[in-house]
Image 1 (cartoon, rainbow, N blue to C red):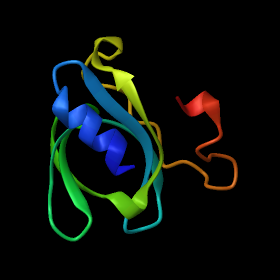
Image 2 (cartoon, rainbow, N blue to C red):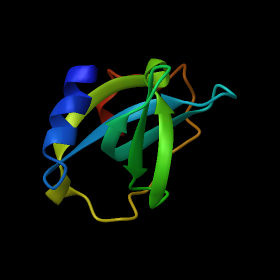
Image 3 (cartoon, helix red, strand yellow):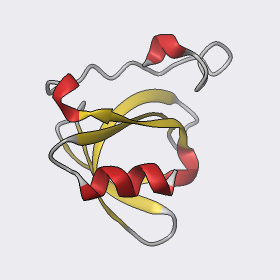
Image 4 (cartoon, helix red, strand yellow):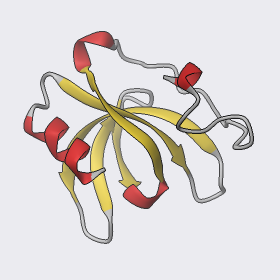
Length: 96
């Protein structure tokens, strides 16, 4: 996962990451993020294209992260969720 984040950070104008994120309440949402930098304690700072503002994300709560072309997204990106964990996982390509 750090490899995907580093790749997108090194090419911020052209790449974003897309993943499922599990929040502190165990809700699962689809996120598209332009990562900015790593923080301490397994977190990273990124511009959430759904919320249109900077957010901190715990890497341990990210699932199914993939690198995508930023040109494929217009802000705001619809943020689906909360998703039912029983029928939505990283292998569920309908989320991406």
